[in-house]
Image (cartoon, rainbow, N blue to C red; front, top):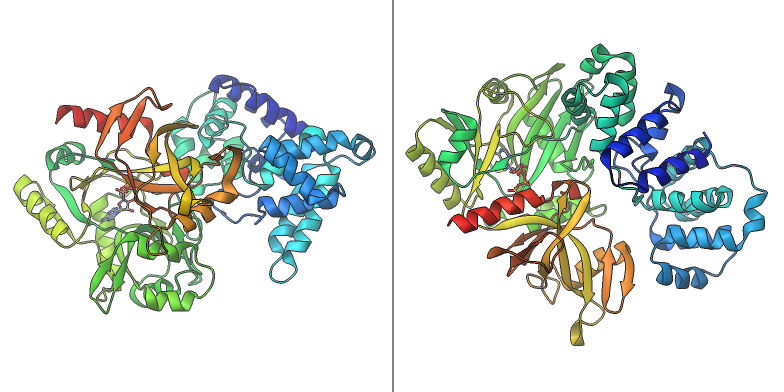
Length: 560
Ligand code: ATP
């Protein structure tokens, strides 16, 4: 397919904010998709792989500037200057193409096939010289692109397409296109299992039977079930019924542990990132202590200091998630304990539709516990509020965050927050938010970003809820200004004076004292006295608090 055709669709999609119009645009585009070119569907999301495959091209803005400079024989400084002016490398590419019009007039058309060919090549380059090879492949594409095409191509390469299209809207368009608006829930349910738009498209095309056949598979990460926050044990019972299961709520990060029939183990975070290589210690323990041929387990991984016999805060082990080097040293310095709380697949059979008690029973059979290495989540089943209250207190005394309350009679609802599982924490006011803007500091902090604007989500939009500058440290220990500046700098979209606008990528857990209505922020709400507690590299922008979540908190404050 000519890339220009897809760019037309991008253009139309970005020209409207109305969901129904977007769905119409998508439906007419779907006529162009066939089995042989189905990969194009990934480009709609600004990616070139299914969502379950989180590898990326590894192209930073700096590398892209080099590729542009090679393609257009321009001095990199000239490109950097334009970038400062326009704030978007896609627009910069478009500007230079216009300037060099005669070049592109005679070039061949850029096709989606060529894009996939080069992207796949770029993915395969590794080790020494790989950056130069990537620059070459990329500049080949840049040279083929025409005016608008280059803008979208560059944004795709930088994983920042910005056409205002969510997966949710694509799934709704599937429902409209294939089933006349029916089967929305089924499509979403299946998407949360496969994380592959192409698979959902092709199965839906064959009909509902084929769609129904899509199932959980070891080796492919699913979107995990999420919890509703409750403010009392009683409310937990209201959601989950009586009796309900109460489990300790561990303060680590979520991990899906998969074993394929051939014995291969895969570890995924809840952002679907494959972290198998980062946790060889977990692979070893799982191989030894989980007795089944194939499985998918849901768990919380917590840092545990063997010398001090103490659990470690999340910040300590969070660095292991992104770590690419010195992994062995890390496993020794920051050992972890796996707390398994669910089993979704066992020996070739999906357990998703089985009740929680049945799934737990399977866990009890297959896990051989080993002190401070692997265990089942500590659980009681009760209908008594006092007993549950006692369990909650003990859980806090042990240093946990609180308790999880679970409905024992229901299936697993992947990707959803439906109240089959609730969380009840101690009186801590905490939210996960994304950083959308930042400001450079002054004096000894000059050169560092030291103040951050936080945002929550409302569908595909990010709405500001406050500014934070406390919680970070001057020096290395904990989360330093230097570290956060290094993380944020590559995400700068625009710069104006001291303020920078950022791609919303960096998620942080933030504590606060109160929430109040405020016209100063786009959400209409402001957090009072926010502090950054930790970076959350295990969470994506889809995991952050929604505007509704914060409104709910506000209501709770008002009722206190
Ligand atoms: P939080 O920031 O409160 O951990 P969250 O946004 O990560 O919440 P939720 O689904 O809202 O995710 O809350 C439940 C989280 O608690 C799970 O995602 C999981 O990481 C963690 N957890 C710890 N212990 C358990 C347990 N026993 N059962 C289920 N989840 C647990």
